[in-house]
Image (tube, rainbow, N blue to C red; front, side, top):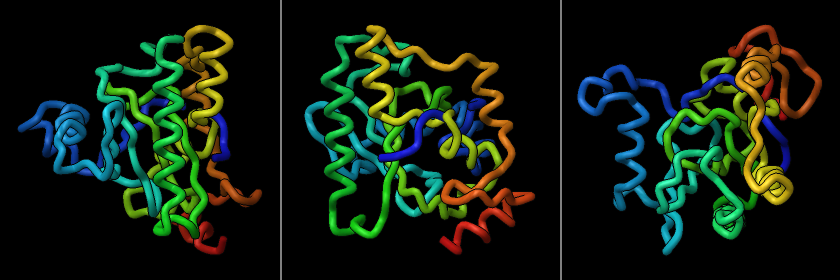
Length: 200
């Protein structure tokens, strides 16, 4: 599952949100409408819905969302331990399919999520997508701003709630210089980085 935490508020999908704002309000509210619409579900059970991220930051990028209206990790308590475990189990089921057998995945949450609904990211570590355009996009999945599902569960077990990095710490994560997530190469810019990751 890999990687640990990761910093500044990031849009899980922000490509053409300004146009959507006129009809649905903030782009994230439009996304919330999507996640509650069964036609977009790739999988669903009594506890969670699964959708493909509308603005994937890798070849495969899913969001697992509880049906219970939980705003964010800040709203999670010890009562939700079994739910988080279930979300992780659903994620493991997804990535074990034949379609994904050639890919390695990370399961985790953003320290400062962009959408007002708890969601677990299930993302392949190729980080190769047209929707991954900015340094903030990159750092939101490759620094400690991205907190693994396992770390969140341990955090919850130890504290009875999820203790998250401060806003200042998150900002530092997001300002981290670009660096390949698979080697020590430090590209000068996103085009150079995106070209480099294709060598892995």
